[in-house]
Image (cartoon, rainbow, N blue to C red):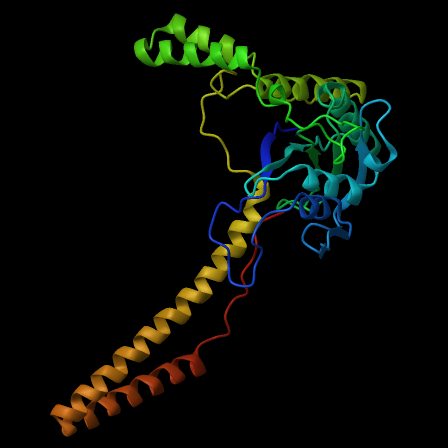
Length: 328
């Protein structure tokens, strides 16, 4: 069943948290491109190679506006030029679009779908797009095809030493007039809560870039599904807007990470409890040793009896039944 997922993120230099000892001190556009493409790339600004093992990468390519210089199509050069064009320590380096691809499409159909969507919505506006399609195994055993699209945030400028314009293209974030209309509509609705002000806010929100891109993916993907002869369709609207009244479901893709995290926490918690119990036993033993040597002897005998009881239980109990997984 095809599902809708489109998420926008910004790749910035700032870590957004304290740096770990010996870890990265900032984020890198080159590192982001290396991870998504599965290629080994050199970041000249940091003097570091980035190399990630990504066997699930099935396709990569770079799309650029007409008459873009040749260096744009070299991934390492492109993102090093992006790094050079940004001076601030907390600079925004790239925008990422993460989209889930319909399982109903073949690899070639998925590539054509992403390529067409990216050309229409982003490259036509002047952005350079670095595309990577991934196809890892999902928690249900089937494939989980999705795409990562890294987008530049400045227009190309061949006259510039960095290859990009001196100023970011702010309209690619949000047009100023649209942002103003949305802010005013939101304030009116927050003040009154009136249904007609809610409708006005929804109309204003539909003018935002993110809303246009989200609906654009829905329309482009549904055309591809129809051309492929599939009856599946996706819908970018909220469940409420679709008239579906149920709680949003947890993403299948996150289930594996939750399961791994649970196993790790369970092991660490068991170890911690064992240490705490051991510390309590030592504390009790030291107390008895100081106050009452006779009680200490009795305490140690009780511990010995407990250990023998546990050993006897396991000697006479049947072997454990292996755990059966219900996942398919």
